Image (cartoon, rainbow, N blue to C red):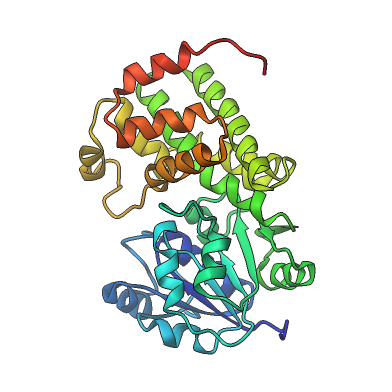
Length: 336
C-alpha cells in the first residue's frame, strides 16, 4: 500500500466530519466530503458553508462535496469515517474503497446490540482495510477555525500510524500516535455518558464539587472497562481518555452536557431536543445510546460502572433523575 497520501474521503458532513475535511485541506490533502443531505452538498459546493451543522465557518474551497458514496471513496487514498456510531456499520458496508486503503475512524461509541467497538465494526463491515482511530478532546468548531488542538491517532501498525499522522497533522492540529486501539476507543465511548451525567449535575445545581467527583469516578469506570477489554490504563490517562473527558464535562459546547443540563432542570428528552435555545434539533446525543451500549457491555464483562448504570436507568428505564442521583450519593463507602 502506498503511503503517499494525496486524497481523502470524509464520510459524514456533520460538524465533526466537516471540520476534519477542513483540517485535511489545510494539511495539503484533497478532501471529498460525503453528505447524506443533498441540500448540504449544494451549500458546500456553492457557498463553501455548512450552515446546518457548522454555522458561521467559511470552508476551504478545496473541499468537494457529494451525495454519491461510491464516487466519494473511489479514488481516495484515505477514507475517514465520521458518522454516528450506530450508523457506522451500515455506511461502511456500502463502501468500495481501493484495495488496502486505510480506514480512519473518527466515530466514538459502542454499537448497540453487539457491544462492538468501532474498530470491530469496521473489520466486519469493510474487511481487508487497515484501521486507525482518530480521537481526543475536540470541539468541531474550534478544529474548523484552526484553533490549537491535540488528538490521538491509534493504529496497531506503527508505520501506518506514522504515515497517517504525517498526512493529517497541521501546526494547529497536533497528532500524538498510539498503538492501543482498544484503549483509545473506550475513552471516547464512555466520556459522552459521563458528560451527560455532568450536565444533569449542573442542571440540578449540585455544584462544581459534585461535577468534579462525577468526572473522577467516571474516569475510574472508564479505566476499569478499558482494562477489561484489553486496553492500557495509561492510554486512558491521555488525550483519548482524561483529555476528552475534561473537555466534554466542562463546557456547554458539548451536546451531551447541554442535553444533561436540560434533564436536570426537569425537561423530558423530547423537550430538550425541541428547545431552540439548546440547539440540539439536528444533533446526535451520543451519550444517550452510549448509556445503553456501554452499560450492556459492562454487565456482560462484569465491570462495575454505577454511574453508567444510573444514567442508563434514567434515560431508558424511566428512573427519576433526583432519586437516582440520591442513590448514587448514598452508595456504601469504599476505598478509592
